[in-house]
Amino acid sequence: MRRLFSVERFVFEDASLDPWVYKFVLTTVLVALLANCIRLALSLHSYREVIFPDGGTLIAIPFLASMSLLLWQKPQLLRRAVIIIFLSLILRITANLIYDLFVPQPQFDLQLLWLSALMLLTYIAPFVVFRRKVACVLALVMLGLWMVLTGLYMTIYWQTVPMRETLVVLSQVYGIHCIVIIFMALFVRLRRLYLRSQKSVSHMAMLAHTDVLLGTPNRRSIQVQLEKRVENAAARPFSIVLIDIDHFKEINDRHGHNTGDEVLVEVANLISRYSRSVDDFGRWGGEEFVVILPDCAAMDAYRFAERIRASMETYAFRVGQVTASFGVAEFQWGDNLNLLLKRVDDALYKSKKLGRNRVELTT
Picture 1 (cartoon, one colour):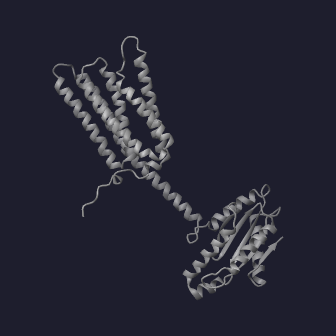
Picture 2 (cartoon, one colour):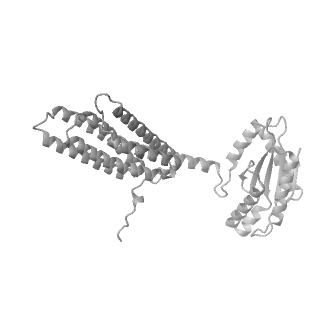
Picture 3 (cartoon, helix red, strand yellow):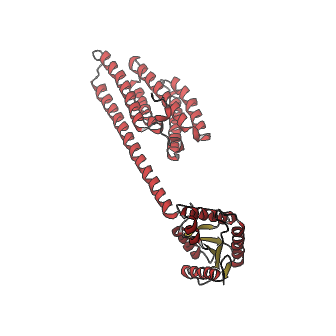
């Protein structure tokens, strides 16, 4: 079956969402707008003669100003704006190059210098929005087109106008253009590898601190949060609640581990429902959960745990009634992390010893 043509196959998928690319493009457009304004000012304030013809400049200034305003107000249109700028630059450079080469004028060298700077911007533009291979092809096609026009000019006027110095200068200019294209291709490749590695590192860090089943912080992450809370406990006291599902091993043995996982998910959802946005909640291990309650005294933490216990007791689990035991402890002056965890663990043990499905508080 013939593959359908789609522009999205050629466009770089993350360009419109990349803040670095957006800032680079916006800065480039603003610099180009400033350069055109300076160019127009030089033309208007020249006492002897017009330094540059300003017809193209008068068109470029409102165009670049509108592109700057568009990008400033709607960053999501970055990709379309760059494509419009890219096509406009190609048309303008090609037209100007033909005019400058085949129409005699006094400021030929300055015109080529100005066009050379625009050409460099045109080589960069494809690498912003198109995939690397497509951008390389477009840049090389543009370079080949302009070299053909230049070569045609030199062939026609080789016998009538001294061309040796011009040939050396143009060879250096186009050599620099080739280096810019190669540099952009390597830069985009290296940047893509860097972004992939950063994404991989972020993903691994998330896996290292997140419970795969529940999507909540795991024990390592919660312990880091507890260490920070202990360090700042003098300015911001806190309490912790340790939760253990009663007879969870029997649920796994009777109904299977998949059903046991479903029970864990349902319990985690119940706890999250009662937790505040400032609370830190995660899986402590196995069937145990922990909730860190900043700015919460012991009795307030006790009532929080009691609400969760009562909700679990009446919740319609798939396996029937599921209950949990709760231990509550408040950070006290002189506590360290080990002492605090021991006290809350003792409270949980007392809750289990006294019959489970209850909340115990240590002081």
